Every structure is written in C-alpha cells, then in structure tokens.
Amino acid sequence: MERERKNKIIRNVLIGIIAVAALIFIIFILEIFVLRGQRQNKKPENNVEENEAQNVQNVQENNTQQNTINQVNNEQTAVIIPNLNEVTNPSTTDDPENTQLISTTYYYNQLDESGKIIYTKLKENKGRLKEGNYKIDFGTQFNTLLHTQTGENELNISFQSAWNAFSYDEADLFYIDISKMVLLKESVSVGGIVTYNVSIGPKENSTYLRAGFETKEKVEAAQKQLQHIVEQVVEQTKNDSPAVKAKRIHNWIVSAVEYDASSTAQNRFHIYGALHEGKAVCEGYARSYKYLMEKVGVPCILISGTATNSDGATESHAWNYVQISNSWYGVDVTWDDPIVVGDGEITDEIKYRYFLKGYTTFTKDHKEDGKFSEGSKEFSFPVLTVNDYNG
Image (cartoon, rainbow, N blue to C red):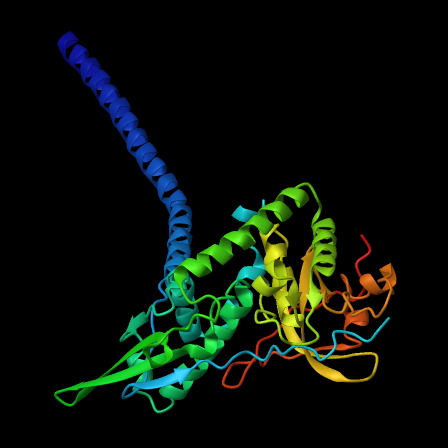
C-alpha cells in the first residue's frame, strides 16, 4: 500500500515536470513565430525602398541611353539655321562649376524621345565636332521609326528640334557653321529586308567648321582666349550674390561690346565676336550673357522672338531670361547698350531699362517666339515673375 502511494506521487511529479517542459516548449515556439512575423512585417518596407532605388536607376539608365538617327537612299537633310537675326538698330531709345543649372538643359527637356537621343549624342561628341568632319553614327537605332508611314518626317523634325535645342542650351558653338551640317540617311536592302542607318556629318563630305576656325587647332586657340576672360569674370564675382553677378556681367558686356550696326563683323552672332573682338549684334550679346552667367553659376536662358523699338518698328531679336531666387526676369543687354551719337552718355535709366524686369514691364515691347526655325517643334519659355526685381 505504501509502495503504491509512493509510485503515485512519483507519477504525479513526472507528469508535472512534463507539463512544465511542454509549456516552456510551446512558449519558445510562439516566440519564434512572433519574431518571424515581426521580420516579415518589416520586410515590405525594405522592398519598397529597393524598388524605388531600382526605379530611379532604371530612369537614369533610360535617360542616358541616348545614342542614334536615320533616312533613305543616301539622302541628306540639312539643319536650318535658327531664326536669331540681328536688329537693324539695337535701340533708338534714349560653386557654380559643380552645379547642374536648369538653364543648361532647358530646351533639351522639351524634346521628344528621338530628339533627346540626337541631342545627347551631339553633346557626347561635342569635343569631336571641333574636327569639322567628324561623323556621329547612330547605326540602326531609328530603323523601326523609319519603317512607319510618317517616320521620315518625324525624324527630320526631331533632328531639327534637337539641333535648335542644343545650340540654344550650348552658347559656345561659335565655330560650327550649322548650314554645313546634315543628317545622313542610308538604306541597305538584303534579301528584300531594308535596314536604315543614320548619321550626322558634314555636308558634301567637306567641313562644318565656320570660316576663321577651319582647323581644330584654331578652334582650341579661340577657346583658350575665351577661357582667359571666363577665369577673370569668375574670380571677380566669386563672392557676389546672383543678382550682383547678373548686374556686373551685364555692365561689363555693355562697356566692352560695341553693337555692329554695319553688320560687317564676321563673328557678330557669336560669343567669340562679342567677348574677344568686341563687336556683336543681339544674338552675340545674348549668347555671351548666357555663357558668362552660367560660368558663375546663375541660370540664364537664350530667348528669341520680336521686339518693338521706340520708333514702332518690330524686329527679330534675341535676349535672356535670368533666374534669381527661383523667379525669372527678363534681361536685354543689347538694348541696354544703345548706339549713342556724338558725346552723349548712357544714363542709368537707359543702362538698366531692360535689366531684371518682370512680365509687366518686359513684355510691353518683347514678344517670344518658340518656333526657332522651320521644321522644328515649338519650344516654350519660363514664365516671368510679374514685377521687376527689387533686391
């Protein structure tokens, strides 16, 4: 009897031990599931971050994979010179290097996919363009487009638009004679299958370098002369605010450049004529202002259109829009540098009449025209702030 009682006690103790062990085991298993669940709950957040990073990478890759062009049977399509004509009379009225400015790709951002491909290839090969006969090859990238009914016309428009955007975003293409640059389109038929190849090159296998810059050496020598000017401007304005930089560069151009009323200066349309030779028309003034402003880190866009002078005459004209504190203002350096007869002087009223002006003032006699040339898309411009700058 006593023995049975002892055995019963032992059994109860063992059952208790087993129950406690089982309870501990169950708790352990539950903790594992809870921890795993917490990790799973956090995992989607990591996936979102990974997906966003991958999406950004894909967009960047898509934006940089821009390489090519096309047409048929050895045809050549010449670039039309953008409509930036000089004014008959300019006026008869009394850390920047590391910053990607909005103005440097302002017109690029408005191109279609084909236009961006062409523009990008031009920019990638900008250094080779100094050779004058370098051929930019796009291979068969536009082959599919050229097999469509409207593909050839679409490509021609993209080509013209791309060049216009490139020449407006890049102010220092003074050595290129764009009338001598063409889009080359060739077709090859093998077994009844036609393949289109496209490239950009010199017209009639000659050169697209401008007279006076017939060799790469001459182009680079001119660039060194301009670089010397840029270095001085950058050094002298490095501690200035954007508005002060805009004013000092405006004043320097007004004092250093003479309007070429005779229209005889060979480089009057470009920065070399304005900054080195001291003679230019409105396009040369406006390109020079953009060129120097971007060198000192201030966004500046080249604008074209028409302007009406005090005599009531409307003329083709070029000027700039400048961004100060996220607002856009009009600047017309050409008309702030009028031809003064005799011993007359340029008063501040005249000198700053078109400097950092808002929409209300500037558009009274300036009208934009986004159609830079025939066969091109129509570009848009920044919206000027309403009032003049008052910093």
